[in-house]
Amino acid sequence: MGISSYLQFLISGLTVGSTYGLTALGFTIIFNTTGIINFAQGEFVMLGGMLSVFFLKWFNLGLPVSISLAIITTTFVGAAIDRLAIRPAKKNSTINLIIITIGVSILIRGIAMLVWGKDTFSLPQFSGHEPLHFAGAAIMPQSIWILVITLLILMSLKIFFSKTIYGKGMLACSYDKKASYLVGIDVNKMVLFSFMISAMVGAIGGAILTPITLTSYDAGILLGLKGFSACIIGGLGNPFGAAAGGLILGVLESFGAGVISSAYKDAFAFFILLILLFVKPSGLFGQKSIKRV
Image: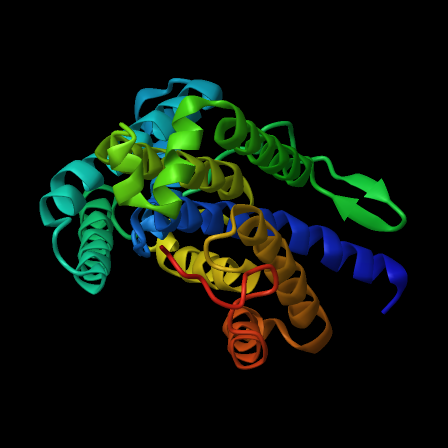
């Protein structure tokens, strides 16, 4: 096994890890605003891919329009989850709200199975199938799309949270909801935005990954669990730690599958998570303890 093989593992890991990072980012955005873990995050990724296929094949709208409509629709699904499931139960304990998100995840998956069946679907790659060759490794154009789009999303979120009034309002809610409310920030609106943004980010991740990995009604389960693992690895509550955690997880998973055995590919994520929880429970980029005052 030469250096070109290791380079190939690295490229594959970064490609898949980017999607894990986007999923983890969705977990973190909602956690920071509400304090809950949204286990329906993986379903946002699934909807991004499945709705893109739906609009493309059923309505023949063209790939860019189909993906745009899928992202917009999933964003509204995120808003609906907040308004119909989370907000009416906001006075309940955090654990109850987390259980609600698990129920929502099962509901979305069930509806997707009824509408689209159990078949696997694919999307065409954005700019052809001809690979680019570098140092003996083959780089699919779709991998470059995924890496560039992920980087643009991270930069956009950085600007949103540091430069816009809504982004600063969401950050304020993550520190202290009551104080945010007292200074005039509409906390309910910030929570709504957090669900919409996390749904949008998840949908983008699903749409850009589907040309490589395909999608189905239950694709969100594993992606959601790996996104959650990436979120913990990077440090729960740290947006850019979550993105870094996704990349680290993807690369380690790719090397593990290539060097040891691809049969254990999906197990590596949880093996790495267990080791990290024993060694550094706060995550690689997380604080040792988080105290909300």
